[in-house]
Structure formats: structure tokens, C-alpha cells
Amino acid sequence: MKRVVMAAILAVCAAGSAGSEDVLELTLEDCVRIGLDRSVRMANARRDEQIAGSRIRQVRAQVLPELKVRGSYTRLDEVESFDMGQGPIELGKLDNYAASAEASQLLYSGGSVRAALKAAELYRERSRLGTQRAEQELQRDIEVGFYGVLLAESHVEVQRESRDQLRAMVEQAEAKFRNETVSEFELLSARVRLANQEPALIRAQRDLEVARESFRNLLHLEEHQFRLRGELRFVPVAVDYEAWRAEGLKRRPELHEQERLVGLWQQDIRAERGKYLPTLRARATYSGANPSSFFSGESGWDWGWDAGLTLEWDLLDGGLRRGRVLEKKLELEKARDNLRDLERAVELEIRAAYLDLKHAAEAVAATANNVELAEKSMRIARTRYDVGLATYLEYTDANLALSDARLNWSGALRAHLAALAQLRCACGLSADEEPGDESR
Image (cartoon, rainbow, N blue to C red; front, top):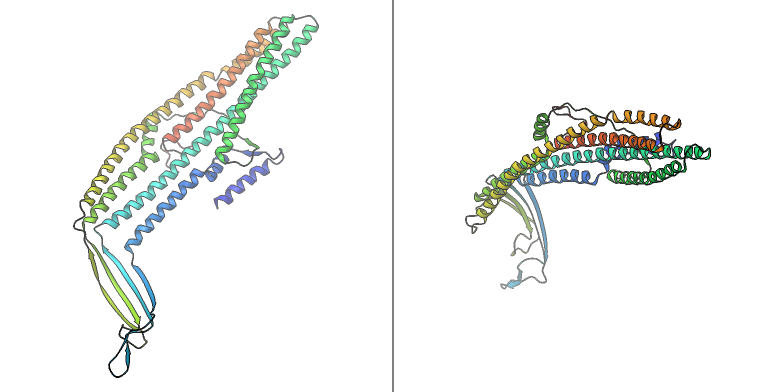
């Protein structure tokens, strides 16, 4: 069903962009859906859930009745016989058949099966949490990659616009030089500045191609031509650090995975201790043979049944069980210590992500008015240059300042969006979730 939905999404996206040279147009939501559907990591995580479910079925099979059917056929090369004076008496038949059906039921296992069943259920829950963690990390990577492509596109646009402005100035300087209103130095300076701008545009185009290919590989997109529909925008966040921290310690999948691992080792210890106790099993057999016995000379099936209880108790094993229990206890202590370390690591990760978000927001605020001021400065420099009140150097300085302001602004926006995606992932939240949101 998921494959059908994704095919429909891609078909709609392709149809919507058919008029623009068959370029696939994707929103962030489209990219997340495609990535989750095509990711090998997600596919393997879902397979792990299925494996965990099969393990539960395997353990449950131990407490259900068992039924075995057996059959055999034996052909003898010759039949022994003896003569008591009234003719030979055969001891059996050349063709011998036997059949049986045996049913058995485990009655008591010292709690080992019950502990194994609980352990299997914990393993399935741990696998489900692993799938949740993989989904959140993939969503974060897709968000960061999506905004990275938008940033690279904005860099190309800024560098191209700067190149075009410098090219226009070169043409104007050439016209003024022919009219002998500017010096040759002004003309050469304009040409040199234009030539120096070309490598920056080439680097920006190269960075864009790399970002697009990396993003296409992340989504496993077969389509080489695609366009991202979105924008770099500021998303204000009013939640304080303590709220993020509390949410992360409550919802981070890795913490719950480690808690399940602690429970797994506890159940393993119970299962191992159960082997100190006896195992009791009931059985019943219904069997038949033809001929009925070795001494029977007549063909015919003879059926019969028997039933009973089987008790097994390993009293001495050379300390094997004791060693296994000790091993599992040490593993349990390791798991508990790892859980405490993981809690500290998660707190540190949340703290670092929160600080990154805070500093990115400060950078956005610091560069918010720079673009407007740089554009105004650029217009003034252009007017002054046109009327001969400013040199070409002043104009190029204003042009460079405008490019830097635009690049810093877009870079700050992308850094803030990436920091927000990282903080959500560090707290175990999906895209667009905030602390305290229990609706998902």
C-alpha cells in the first residue's frame, strides 16, 4: 500500500511540473515521505520489527501442545523360521509397518518459558523504538539536506546577481572610457573585479551540484532533474531549555531502547535461574504395528496407546548454570551503567543543540537589517558613480558588502532551521512537534 501511495505522490509531482521540461517538483513533506519509503535503513528497521514478532511466536510455541506423527517400513531379506515337526513357523514377515502419533504438553519449566516470552516482547518493543529512532534521524537529515540545497541555490543566485551587476558596470565603464569621461585605470579595475567574481560563481555552482546530488542520494531519487519548493525562513521558538530537556529525557527513543535492554537482561537471568528447577511434561502416544509382533506370522494392525509424565531435573552440571547467571548479572550491571551514561549524553546533546539554536537565532537577528541597509548603500553608490561623485572602487565595495549581507542572511536562516531540526531529533520529536505536544 505504501508503494502505491508513493507512486501516486511522484506521479502528481511529475504531472504538476510536466510543463517545465519534466522537472520533478518536491516540497519538504514530499521529500520526507519519499525518503521514509525508499530508505534502506528504514526497510531494515521494519524487518527487525518483523524478526522480533517471529521470535515471540517461537517462544510461545514452547507452551503450546506438540503433536508428532511417525511412520516406518522395513523390508527383511529373509524371515527366520523353525520347525517343531508340524512344518516351519516363520518369526515375522518380510514387510513390516509401524505408525505412531505422540502428543506432549509442557506443564512446568521453572519460569524459564515465561521469562523468555517477556524477553521476546521487550525485544519487539526495542525494535519498534529503533524504527522510531531511525525515522526521526532520517527526517532530520532530510530537513538539513533540503535547507542545504536551498542555501546553495541562494548562494548561486547572489553570486550571479553580483556578477551581472559588475558586468553592467564594465559596460558602463567602457562607454565612459570611449567618451573620455573615465580613466583607463577605472576601466581596468572594473574588468579585473568582474574577472575575480567569476571563480566565486563557479564555486557556488559546484557546491549546488554537490548538494543536489547528495540530497538525491539521500532520498534514493532516480529522477536526476528535480526542483525543491520551499524557502529559507525564520521559525521563532519560544520554548526554554528546561522544557526541551524534560521532553528529551521523556521521549528520546535511545533511552527507552536501553531501558528495554535492562529488562531483557533481567528476564534472561530469570530464565537461567529457572533451569535450576525441574521440567515437567505430559505425553500420550497412540501406535500400531503390522504385523503386531516379531513372532506374528499373520498380517494385521495392532493398535494401542500409553500416556504418562516426564520429569527432567539437571542436578549437577559442573557449575555451568552458575557461570551463566553470573555472566548475565554482569551484563545487567553494564546495561544499567550504560543507561545512566546515555542519559547524561542525551542531556549534553540537547544542551548543545539548544545553544546552537539560540546562537543561530542571534545571528538571524544580527543580520536581519543588513540586507536592507546594504541594498540602500548600493543604490546610493550607484547614483554617486553615475553622476561622477564616487569612484568605481566605492561601487565595488558596496556591491561586495551587499553580497556578503545576503550570504550571511541566508546562511543564518539555514543554520537556524538546521539547529531546530537537530534539537527536535535530540529530544525525540518529529518534524513540527514542540515540547508538550502529545497529539502524535
